[in-house]
Structures are given as structure tokens and as C-alpha cells.
Length: 583
Image (tube, rainbow, N blue to C red; front, top):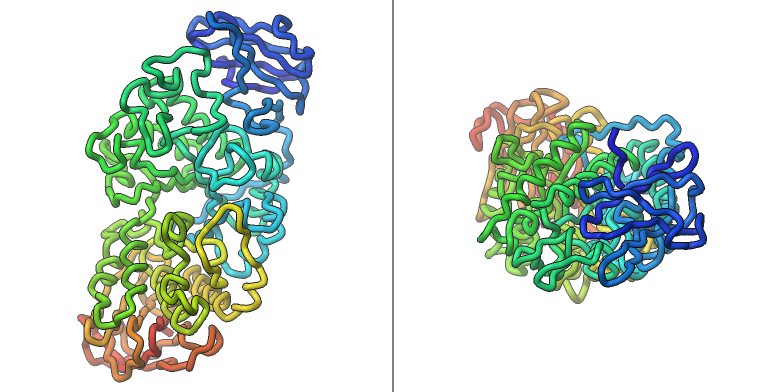
């Protein structure tokens, strides 16, 4: 049986295995041998790897590899270390099998049932730790979300970061609390019915505090050595640090990393950062990297092979259908972030002039999922969408009054569209209580805003619960059936029918007014005559300083409209969304 890469706990100590094909010698140094370089040499396995067992090594002891080269010894942190003292410190021996999962056997909800909440551990709470994040899980339970997407937690340089600069891909960030605190967060999420999706970064490593760089001393063309491309394929916007996807050992390293999160940490899905730079040189597909494409497929097949319910998401932002295709040419991701949806919806709602706002553009977004609507993740805010020159939606809508009537109305109607559209909806931390400004890894959420804007929180809560069919009368919002039935450019009104199987308790009709004037007497098509209950009206005073305009429950009559067999006349408040369920 092959010895796993990295450190593995055995009865009398630890086995070690490391890939260093250009090393002359490799030894393990650490607290167990006084950091003496000649005490514990590993044996060459003849395939570029070195392996051995140290009976005196114990959990929580610090260690490194001492790699002998023609230029002298190099001390390196184990590429597979699960914990480090810090990004420029030492590796720490851990025992992943020693964590008490308390019988955890959680399974990820289906894509149609998911509502994702993206968060950054360093800013989600004042403490910025995994344990502190656990104290806020009840807020998420009350909100109704059933998945969190955690921005990267692999050890990075320094104490503050978005996380997209992994120095040690297998090690859990020490500032956040290390691997067992992360497992504790996952376990507590699962107890509350919340799946955990983790961001991982494979389009580049580092670029700083990167011990993988020239790991065993060898390099060509001034590049990074065995883990990286040694030609122009190394170049990325984050340095010459693109992994060499053509090397079997590097492919194994990346795939092993993905499987580690799923197996050892029980995460329920992975979101791969900027896959456009895995599959192409410039991120726009001008010159593709075939090895990058095949690596993504290999990774997805491996993850789904051990966890068929796991969700893998590509952040590609190029809307390339091949990413979620399962044929021979596809990468077999479960879903991808829909770049067009967020760009078009945000820009459309931020337009000051109602007359220039294109309802057709929004209707087009709603139907862009084709026959695979849950292969896309939809949102109006994310860590990227509210940084890099952009702010949260409310201040971009109304810079002088970011918490005023206009900002609240337009940002919530946009969120209402995203939360009812055919796709997997996602919100970003603090979006539900009108967090302003732009995302910064040094600025934590102001949780007092959850009380200040309790109405906005209630709006998100009510929509999310409809999305998840909590009252057993909006099942259609989790179904693949959808049709945009009404798209009125003049009135700035659109309507959409959602269904799972159809019928009472299933059919849902969503109507939105994207203009600033009240609208009355709009005849909207419905899939059946009879009573329809108004489940949410975003103009309700319950949600903010609003007037409560718009229809309530209504009776659809057998009068065809919008290609539907029945219809009803209704009214809508300005910049508002209404959700009707078939009684």
C-alpha cells in the first residue's frame, strides 16, 4: 500500500513522504529530534519521492524538511502540512482522525433547494475566527440560508487577507484558529442544517511566503521550480505562479487538496477561484491550456466519486457552458457563478433614469439558464462585486443617501429578482442589513445594523423561506420549470412563472416593477384561474419606510393573457417585487 503524501499518524509516530525529485538528501527536522539535520533521513523511493517513519514524532510538534542540494541545505515546510505556526514558520503535526465529528453524516441539499451565504471569516465577526463565526450561525438559521460559502482559509501571508493568496494550500489559516476550529465550525453548521462550501485557489499559488517556490532547489528560466510552469504558461495576474497542470505530481497535489477538504474537514462543496486562468493563458480563452481543462475534470470526478452530493462551483465569469457540461468535452462542475447576471442586473438597477432601464435585459437574464437553470449561481453582491472599484449596491444606487428610500427600494427589488430567479441564489455577508461601502479584509461587519434595518432582514428572511418552501406552498421556486410571461418596457413591469410539477402549493408567479412610479391595472397572466395568495410584497411597511402599495391576495379569472390561460389585474408599488402562490 502506497504511503500517503505528507505526514500520516501511525501507532508509534508519523510517516512522512515528500516529492523532491532534485534533492540529494531529505531529512525531517523538528522538536522530536532537536532540529538536528542528520537524525532522521528519508529514503528515496526512486520516483522523486522520499519516505520514512519517525517513531518519536508526536502530534502538535513542529517540523520541517531539510533538503540537501548542490547549493547547500534548504529548510522547507511540508507542502502537505495541515497546520503551520505561521506562513514563514514551521509545520505542525496534526491528527485529522482525532477530531470528534459526533456522528456527523450531513448531506448537501440539492441545487434547487440551496440558498448560499458567502462570508469571510476575518470580517464576519469582530474576533475573525472560526469559533466566533459559530456564535453567528443562529442568525443564518433565522434568515433561512442552508449553505455558507467560506472565502479561502488556506494559510496566507500576514494576518489580513481575502485569502486568494495561499502560501500553504493544505494548512488552515492559523489566525482564524487552525484546522480543528474549522472542523468545529463545519460540524456546528451541519447540526443546524447548513452546508459548507469552501473557496479554493488553484489558478496560482502565493505569490508571497511561498515555500513551494523552487522547493527542492531546481528551476529553469528563472521560474518557480517543480510545482510551476517553467515557460510563458507560468504568468498570471498574481505573478509567475501558475501550477504546472501537466506534471502528474502537481495534478495529484491539487486533487489531493480538494479531497482533503471533503474527506478530512467534511465540507460539502468547493468553489474554484477564477477557473478562466486554469483553462487559458490570459483568462479570456485566447490560448487554452488543455492540461488545465483535464485537471478540472479529474478533480470534479474525484470529488463527486467520494461525495456524489457535493457541490463544485466554478468562478469563471465567462459564461462558458463547457464548465458545467458532463460530456467528454466538459469540466463537470455542478454550477458556475453567472457573471452576466450580476453585471447586467446591478448596472440596470443603478441607472438613475427609469426610462433607459431595459426590462428586456432583465427578462433575458432570467431565461439565460436554458434547460439547466441550477447550473448557475445568481447574486447581486459578492466579495468581488462589492470591491475592485465597486461598492455595495445601496451606495452605488444613491451615494448621498445609501440607506435612504431609493437605495433600499432598488437594492431589495434586485435581491428579490435574484432570490426568485431560476438558479442557485447567493447573498454576501451583511447584504441582508444594508451594509455599505466596499468589502475590505480589515473592516468587520457592523452587526448593530441587523437591528437598525430589521425590516430589510425580514424581507430577505421571508423571500429565502419562500425559496425553500417553508410553508409548503411555494415549491415551484425550487423547480426547474420557469417562463418569463410578461415583459412590459413601457410600464417597466415583468412577470415570471416558476413551477416544480405545477398545481396548488407548487405554482408561483413573481411580478416586479422596476420603475419609480406606482403601477395599477396591469393585467398579468397566471397559469390557472382561482385564488392566489400574495406571499411577499416588498413595498410593505414591514420591510422599511414604504407605503404598502400594491395588490394583496387576488383571484385570477379565465381570461387568457401573456400566453397563460388565466389572468388578473393588479397593482405594484414603485421598485417592488411581489410573489404569488397558487392556493
